[in-house]
Length: 294
Image 1 (cartoon, one colour):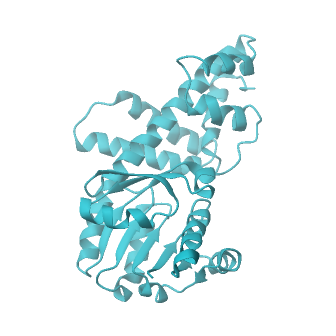
Image 2: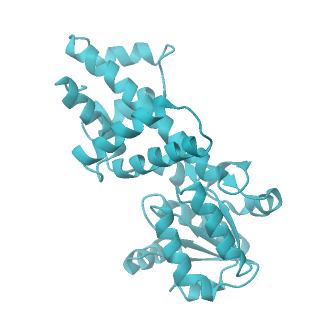
């Protein structure tokens, strides 16, 4: 059976690689894992039955998954690994990357006989743990179909277009997350300032036309509780809203709301902190209104 490799054992990567390992255990395959901090790879191997590997050893894999913070990080790993790759290998990048980078990375890897697909994911850590992530696949249709059955961490896998399309969809999706989160925060901060019970207001909103994932899930569990658990960083959300704006500019589109939320998200990442959870975006809303949302 195929040897797969997973590079990047962050909050999402750990359960995604674990899902691959569970699949491999049933079909006689194996999963190699790598992380910049090698102790994470060894800990993953001990807990999930994967095999910690060096970059050179990853060249044994017929299927390579990456889940890193940015496309620049993927470029760095490609540079370290490309001389060890074998023709016929497929590289599936689950990073929330940049569409322009996808084209350059695919061209670079094709020179080695390696096919590259952009395949960012959505669903958060809970979705990764449950192996129910939504995967946005960009690349030639035949290549996408060839790897669809290998995505053990996916609940849904959608081919959204050619190379770069997956990254574009992910960026716009996350920009819409920021729009919904910011807009809901503004409304709730104003209501709280007027003495309205925010929990009761959310009960109404979530049974009405103003509901969103932000109002149904994120705000009740992370903002009202004041926990803001660090899962997906505010700095990474700002990176994604910036990519979404690049997508707008690439087609000479008009998206003033996305442009505004990009500016606000970048401001929040600077003022609140890039390592804070993305829901801490609303801390800037609170500062602007002099009112906590609780």
